Length: 284
Length: 332
Image (cartoon, rainbow over all chains, first blue to last red; front, top):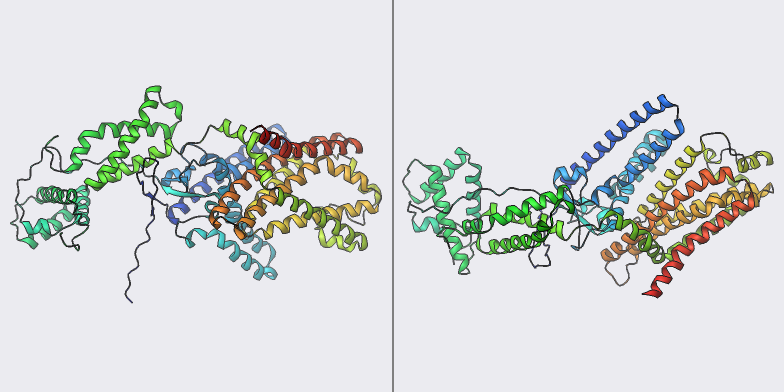
């Protein structure tokens, strides 16, 4: 019964016209919720500021009607088109999504059309505002309708929590518009761990190099790039103890050399068609 | 080739200048727009993109440097979306919407539109006869707040006053309120289509019931034609818009329930995009209706003129949606 559940993989194949798979990573439900919360707060702040400003103007000029019209139209546009207008831009993201590092993309890889963006955002009406209105209806109407309200809340909750019920984290809006939300992280290129001039001076026993695969190599890369002395020392000690290599008091240098030697060896294996994923896979 | 120990080093030495150039171009594109790039940059962009993409493909096969791979992945992805995922300019999108997208969307959902119109009329007739038979029905159909005194107990004079006295309240403000309220309902009924269109159909039916009930009140006092004219001046546009929004919701619900030859997912997506375009059109129509209501109805008191404007508006919409599109199809 001890069937370990694999962590849900959010990578999806996405092949460009040039035939390279970009392996998009879908946004997690948490990231989506965070982005939405940021947008909602921004909306409320803008609404509050605009209302205060307009109220000030109305009190000063006495043009109640004109100010009222601007407020109503502004509120309408803000509520319904804030998301759409930003997502139609070059980044395909609202300010909230941009901060979290997300982007809206058409699922079929084509251009994201205006109609799709409008469709996915108009659906917020049943995903967000419908549950909200039932929530407030409850407090307004008292206990007589409690059962009905709870039922309505549960029904509208289905739309709200829809992304949690499907593999691709699709909102109802994404489903209808044929879009999904992906991670777009901006990363700088980290330095080269091995370098052009490096020659491995240390000698490693054959069994030490033969013991590891790609998975271990990339974990070692993580440790080296993080440059945490404690972790570096622990990993160096483990490898030395395991294969009886004498300690030369340079943990980082030792591991860097080991990384370079192991990397060169595994790469050579790959060229000859022997790809060793991890230490559990026997060397071919 | 240099005597580097691992492939990642070779890749970096050979191509990192190209990657960094692409990185800076993409960054500028993301921040601003195409105009941020010079002509030379525009020519370079596809080349750099292809170089980076092939670096990625090669690195995946021959290199084990995780940092290099993830850098190339994110750079290629960002570049891909700036090159292939671009939107046409906002202005082009707007003209396309009015010239092609909107009428085409309406044509695509003419069946649902006809159904919504028929439902509105049928519900209106039903409510009319119910209220004529027993005025008590009126209170069951229309909430007191909405009727504002226009109920069966009102006098002829009071009812007549609601049709012809512009009133002295902030009318433009009220018309704006009605526009935003109706437009919100239109968007709502589009979204409710996802619940298999049932709530959308209920909304449309209820709208028809209210119309019929109010009409019965005026008709009983001999003000039927006057009420019709009062309603028509903006009502033809507004009711058509409500039917369009309802039809948009139905389209989604029907695609979900009866996807036909397509998969359920594909049918829903196709319906969703068409319906969203139609719904956006409905919002535009409601803005027009708001203008007609706020300005036209307050200044024009002649029944014939009111009816004429309403009739012309309706004919105009129908010609725009169906005739102009047919002509274009013939030209192709």
